[in-house]
Image (tube, rainbow, N blue to C red; front, side, top):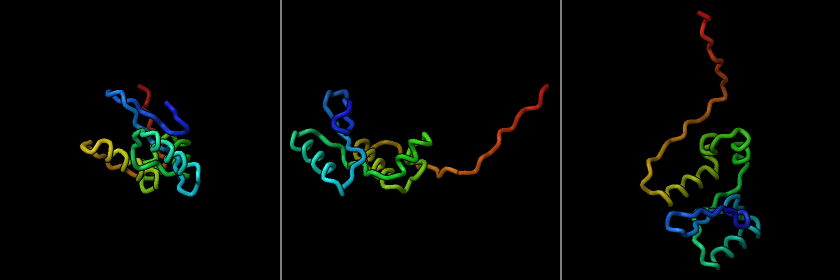
Length: 110
């Protein structure tokens, strides 16, 4: 469910958990949106996901931002959000993607 650009998740306990994507501390829209959500008493998952160009690149390449740019602000924010929300989860270390193209081998016809 979308709420003013924020993603809302419904848990099995039927309560709302809101993530704030594309958060930009430099804009009043991001600040006022977060404040309005807090004033309503709705639970916000922290931290907000900061806007960065690596998110767009990851979407274009159809890979998670944590794989494409693990040191980006968005990847760090997603990792912190997951750690806050799921503190006991098994952590996977993302391997850097190689830009090297490896041709596929074809099996000889029998």
